[in-house]
Length: 154
Image (tube, rainbow, N blue to C red):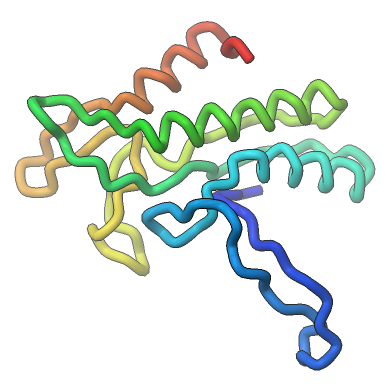
């Protein structure tokens, strides 16, 4: 599964699809998505329950964060905060019995996004597109620590 946020909907019999989107209640990210890190754990629990405990692979999860480098450092605090929340939800779902086999952060490097070109920064490593120089962001350091410890304090 891939998950970046949530979309709350309500029943609406007057629409052909039978529902309508509800206005976001949480702050929005650079992509216009709700900053809803709890959504990953909620969705994993739903899939695990609804489909009788399948093996789950989270192949993309993360957030766009436009924080630029300053003095050779990219302090992408929003991404760190949301990644921590996503991982807390993931760990909670595993504690509740979900069979999660893999988790991949979205994405290693800032890159060309097929629909948005170079206008968004998805990676945990900042890329200077002119020179191809790379700077690991604060989120890369956070995620490296999670991997090193095989977890984090909740």
